[in-house]
Each structure stands twice: as C-alpha cells, then as structure tokens.
Length: 459
Image 1 (cartoon, helix red, strand yellow):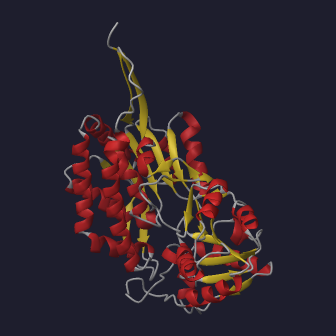
Image 2 (tube, helix red, strand yellow; image 1 turned 135 degrees about the vertical axis):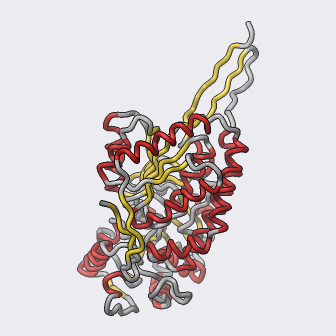
C-alpha cells in the first residue's frame, strides 16, 4: 500500500512510494525528538550555517528540482525555476531575520531584577504541506522552525512526494540528517501522529475541509497549537483612477499563474464602471495569449491542472455563472486528451455576486469580473466572503489604498500588486483562510513558546 506520483501532463507514473508503517513513523519521531534535545542547545549562528548549507544543496540541484516539480504537478518549467529561486531568497531572508526575531524581549530596566521574555523552541513540528508550491509552502515553516531550535516531521502531498525527499537529502548534505524526516502517511496515520505526545506543533497547508479536520484532531486530546494556511477567494479592485494598462496584465497573471492553483490567486475582480468595458476587451486579449501544452517546453505558458479531480469544480463554477447570466469567454479549444487534464483560461464577465465563482474557491484559471459604481460598493463586495487571505487595490491614491487597508477583512492588502508573499511581512489569514502566521518575525514567534524569566538579583 502506498502512493503513486503521476505526471499530470501524460499520466506517466513517476514513482511508487510505500506508506510509512506505524513503527517506521515512530522511529522517525524518536530520532527527531532526540535530535531536538541537542539542537535546542545550539547557537543561532550554528543553526544559520546549517540552513545555509541546506539552501546550497537546492541551489546546486536547482535545475533537477525544477524539472521534477514540473513533472509532478504540471507547472511550466520557467515557473518551477522561478519557484526554486524564490525559495532560496525566502530562506536567506529568514536567516537574516532570525537574530532580531529570536532575541529576548527585555522590559524597561528595573533595579535589582533581571527580566526578559525568551522565544524558546517547541520540539518536533509536524509540517503537512500541499502540492501547489512544493518548495515555497514548506520553506515558510521548515526554515524558521529549524532556526528556532525545533526539528521537523515533514509530510508532503502525495502529488509532489518526490520533493519531500529533496528536503531530506538537503539536510543530509548539511550534516544534520535527523533535523528533518519525511513521511508518507495515510489519513488515519496522520491523525494518529497528531495525538503523539512527542509532537509539539502542527502546521497545515491545504483545503478548508482539511483545516477543520486538523483543528479537530489537534483539539481532541491535547492542548498544542496549530497553524492553518487554507483557501482564498482573493479580490482585486480597479478603482476609477487606476492605471489600467498596468493593472490589467498584472491581474490576469495573478489569476492564471500556476494555472490559478494558488491560495492567493486573484479569484474575483471588481472594476469601476469607467474601466469596465476596456478591462473586458483587454482581458480577452491577455487570456487568448496563453499557450497551453507540455510544461517542459519553453513556449508553454500554462500547463495541466495538477489533479484531474479539479476539473469538476471549475466546470461547475463556469456553468453556474453562465446560468445566472454571466458572459463566458475562452479563446482556447481543448481537444483529445487535453480535455482530461487542462482547463482553458476563462473570462466570466458580469459575474453575479452570489454565483459560486464569486463565493467558493475555484483554484483554477478563471477570471470572474463584476462591475461596480464606486469605492463603497467595491469594499462591500470585496468583504462579502468567507475567506480573508489577500486583496489588492489598483489606484494611484495612497489615501484610497489606506482606506481599503483599514476596512478590508483580510490578512494582506496590496496596492498595485497582487499574488506575492513578502517574507519580511507576516503571511496570515482570517476566516476560512486559516489562523496563525508564517514569514517575518511572527513566523518565528508562531513556532516558539514565550518563556518569562523573572530573577531577583538584589535585595
């Protein structure tokens, strides 16, 4: 019993991997716990040097790893290469942030006392990762967890299970093979491991349904915490004063990059009446320019969906919007086996606010667009969502952006940018987008405990 790693472009089986047994998983957790007891005593500079060696492995193997990502989940090779580079940059940023983020917090000096709040490691962190960004999702947890003095039990999605093995190889290359162990687990085994007393924190990236299951499992018998990075239904607003020639291509790319399989992809677009018709015309042209095909070929700009099962949701969203009066446009005619793995980038004009495509996560290359008359209507409709991960406002007016920044119910607000994670800022969401924070100093705080030291040094 195990998993098959399948190339979504041609359905070739890339690898067959067995599931861990209860015994093998327990042995890995034992090794991680033993390593933690030593690692927590190490100097921060030592930890940084180990992480830098891990990153050096990925830099040296960048081309092989990028190609492997493309083979496993179908993103164009150029995008996979970009993911490797962003992974390296993000890892280096977290190394630079670690000294200040992990430094003790010292209250105002008080004579006769030593007082400080330390950020101490937790122990074994169980990191459960989705497939859509095989490097960028785990780096958000793995690197700060290790830098903070933890060790990591790493479960990657079965879709991209080979990438987990590269992390294991990287830590072996760095001379610390027991700081991270990868596992292949059944659903039941995952739940059982969460209850293991040697696990001190759970970090999960995936669906809202999966997040609820993880949260229930964490709360079942123990009082450990978890971080949940879940779905998104991220809106963009093109305001009356927006530079449409700049906003349009950025928004289209924000919706279609990685075939729309991003939690922070643009999934709703609200366009001021002044720009609406021009946006629709321009979006049709931009979507028509995508080249669908073999993701290993240089000319391909959109590959297959990572999972064929996603096609049903996308067709449902398009059909529902059409039945509610939306205009559907796609310039690509899929033929033969393409219909089984690809979804053409699709414009949905005049999408009603109550349509599925405006309320439920699509996770595919759909661009639903809704006309609004002013800022107030845009803000109201942007907030009409169960999700709250990111939102973008396309305007030249900083005061307008600040107004939306105050009133939008979401974790990150962009002005004239979208679909981007700045590692110096906290990556966080509200509502069905999850709980907790990764990246920035808060990414370290989320993976450590606060310990207060209150020493009387005089009388």
